[in-house]
Length: 409
Ligand code: HEC
Ligand code: HEC
Image (cartoon, rainbow, N blue to C red; front, side, top):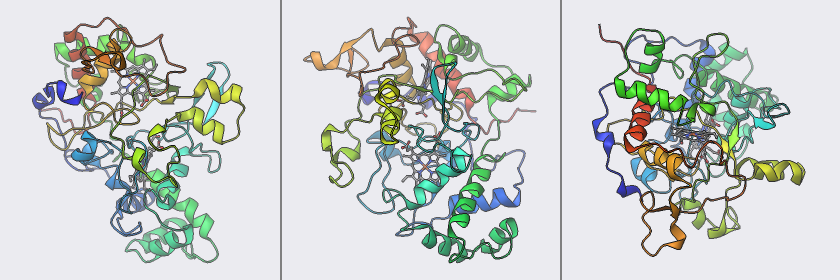
């Protein structure tokens, strides 16, 4: 389907981006944030060496996957060990620091918080989902593949920033024989500090400048914002307004929904050996419900959540290393452009099912069936009645959310 859409991306305007430190307004990091940054970018912290957090969360791609070939296809990234793939697309690792500890909100009757697409880094252990999440990839055999926390501790002890670690956490804090679990927690907390830093969350987009009344949005961007908050219903899950204390909008409410995104048939996980993927080609990603089931909740608790995934922030959703660079969208990277996903929101329930057609052209005359048909959200999407021009305006608005914007003098 992905080739059907004309790469409108080619006309993105100039305010794309450089590396982690923005062109204007260099940020300074606290020692703890700097330590977290060293850990985040250290490709020695994997077995074999060569993979860091940034390998899958690169600043120039908005802290998500920087390999176009992967984004165009299965969208799941290979771990440090050849041939081992995870089953999901990397979401951005920035702007997630305010996600609360995972809980069921009785008033809203909805799960909220945690990290990962399915919330399984709940944050209950460290009282901080982001710090808890940061501990996962190092020891995940499908990611950085370090055998245990002690080996990770030893690698940090051998690193060029070992003294910075001791400066932040105290003399003797890198004793890997006595203190491993404490050290492991501190590694997570340091990375979380970097992920929450001004450098990773600069709030320096055109939209932020517009909120600060420093710049005008174009007519199309303004129309897009209006649709985003109105007819398109996007802001119902991706809030665009400032928080109660004037905090800048994060474009996520940290809740979960099943949008009915189809399977991504190119996901390399389908071909993984039974040890990692016992279901093979029949694998279904059940999201939050799957996690709750595994964690021992009752069917009455996990069934209604099956197929739901966490609402991601839309900050930097269009941030790319170069204008035509392809990014993948959704938990399995099924969508390859913002145009496609907006068209899906607009027409999911209008176009027929591809499975029923002899000449299926996804996005044109049909959409494939949802990966999980249960618990579909039918209230806020599926048939929005947007015109082509309106879809384009919403995309234009989302492009104003990329950091690295500077107001011309
Ligand atoms: C091999 C690629 C890969 C590597 C290496 C990797 N990640 Fe990820 N990251 C992912 C994928 C895929 C997900 C989503 C997984 C899921 O939801 O099950 C993810 C999820 C996350 C999230 C959750 C974001 C959210 O909104 O829920 C954060 C934060 C994150 N990673 C940070 C890190 C850090 C820190 C490291 C290094 C310690 C790291 N990642 C290493 C691929 C990677
Ligand atoms: C009912 C809540 C809800 C509404 C309404 C909603 N979204 Fe989403 N959005 C989500 C969820 C949940 C995901 C992740 C779903 C998944 O991957 O299965 C998502 C994912 C996305 C992504 C992919 C981001 C990424 O990093 O992969 C984009 C882009 C997006 N939404 C834009 C929009 C736009 C534009 C609208 C309005 C037309 C909108 N959303 C309306 C909940 C919502």
